[in-house]
Length: 623
Image: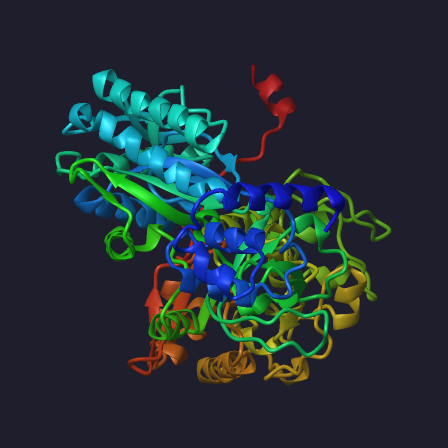
């Protein structure tokens, strides 16, 4: 350690020598651990048991920051329990499903009582005493019911607490801040703003109405036991992304991290230049070590999942739940929103079984140019010498280069400008939904490859995941114009046009095997063979397989997975006509029952109205 750090810990040690050693600290010191590391371990585990602190010390034996004098950050929250919490959790889940993820999903339901503050490791017990004193002082005046009034704005939705109950809660926060300053020498800033329980924050404005409807369905008449809960977090990783390990990983190189299911990894998005495709650099919360890890072994976690719960004061019970037994019971009562410091083996196995399900998301491409401007679209944007120009804003700004020139686009049209916009909106919504795409397959049609690329760009995965071009999921060739199959862009042309194509992928159905005007049964057979290979190609992937293709594949690529026979040809044609741009079907494998199921897609359908061409000259002359 540096000289300054040695002086700091010497000061801590001297303070402890003058008084009896705390019960939790004594066994750790007896085992030879330095006082400062023992105190750090106790603070990092919520000072529950010496056994948990010992496990923490064992896991952090190679932590380069173990001797750093970096305290935890603490905050005090007022948290609902019982039926009200259950309804709020239901709102959390349904709002995420209907309106995608927003900032409120990063934390459990709570009313913030003070800002995060630091406390020296040796004074954490004094914080607990400050919480108890503040609770006991306000116990008699704490409101029997906390009134909640819904407030909504363009970017915020939540319940406000006002009137005399709010005054009492503020007084409790002020009392805790005063006691913490006296007992633990902490500078605590109690919340002075309008007390609120956030339901949604930083959401899309067009989701406001749907979120309001969900919020009004929350019954507020239920009795509720409110608890003041003290949490801590590692202040070094406040602005990092948090990943959770899904499976075990044993390092193959010295610069890689060991992963166990349930581990949390802190990742700084701004420091990923050194990482190769499919890998990230992170710091393990369990060990404190830094290294590379395979990104597809992880999933995004919430910000509060890594917070440590210390103590809580339950007002309606008039008890200070400091014991380990009560703390565990409280964790069970509060369910998924209270992070646990350890998981049993059986719960880890249950988590692994849940997330290991294969999932397939089939998406139709965005709006194509000829869909708007008709079969003669190419003549509208071609100069006499065969060069491309943009006659309407819904034509793309440019076209990729093709060896045979612009004529090859006639039966392989690109996305329109609106189609590009649609694809980006869908990708952005998928990002907000929290879905994790692990592999992407696309039809060789330009419009499908473009859609896949745009979705990956919005997911920030365009450099990490290569697009696998699969001709077997191309459109039913009977619906394609001409007596020959369309001339599609080669893999080399796609790469030259800046598409991140996987040239090593061996498709289930080679492009040369596509037949013009194939029968319906031939089309169904090749789609079936292709989707079976696609699913089998990704046996170890724990994310979602994205298939970007045509409207027809929403049916022809999902029915084989569901074990359903092909539709009648006429019914199939009628169904496909109703599928919009960026329409989606989502399939999940149910391993327990040994079958696949259709479930709700992670994002909603994109709907928009028609827009007619406008010529100002005709309008003027009409007057």
